Image: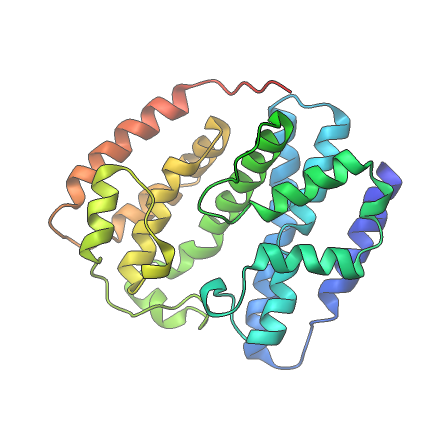
Amino acid sequence: MEELLKKMHSWMTAYMNRFVTDDEVVMQGIRIKMIHTGYVTTISRELAQHLQLSLHDVQLAEIMGLFHDVGRFRQYSIYKTFNDAQSEDHADLGLKVLAEEMPYLQELSSEDAELVRFAIQNHNKKEIAPTEDKRQLVFARLLRDADKLDIYRVLSPYLTPDGVDRAPKFIKADASQQISPDFVRDFAAGRQADYHKLRTHGDRKLIRLMWVYDVNYSWTLRKMVERGYIDLIIKYLPEQDGLEKGLQRLRNYIEQKCAAKDRVTL
């Protein structure tokens, strides 16, 4: 598997480099995705090790992290956006890229290859597709956590009011700091909001807080807290009626989740 991993890393590096351009506006997005790919690959491996998975499964987690956003590069090349709602679902597009251009998945067993595809396809969906396969659930949850943990890092510099102006165009929304009333209601109820209704910069911030309820492993949430990502978002929320109820619910949830122990059964 180590040799196969090396070939996959080499292929992904070469694939990403195909999108390097002299256009600095385009490169702003491509560079972010290149760096994000590296971080998610590392985080996926670390989380798998924390969960005490076998070496083989740790390596599968690394493969999932490596290829989870492969669709982003073709997406931006075609549509000049990373917004799935304005283009196409980047996870589904990533599976097309792997099927058409990446020769090494076929060197995995059919079961492992399907596991990788399932995790990639479900890493960005509102919910994981129903499955009775425990391994599929474990790896899909792992990849979703790794992705979210690094997206917090990516977005942190753009939370401040002046950060809105510095943000790449694919991150920007309406610069208003106010949060849409339906998002506030969802937050107070402790449920996920509909991303397609995102309208303002304030909405974007609150969605990132709502992600906390979709973090699967306490290890991941502890990392988010330790790195200050949650507090930073809260710091730059607007003063708005209804938010305090949601924040209190969130704080209680974080305390309980971080105290829990991670256990997986495969």
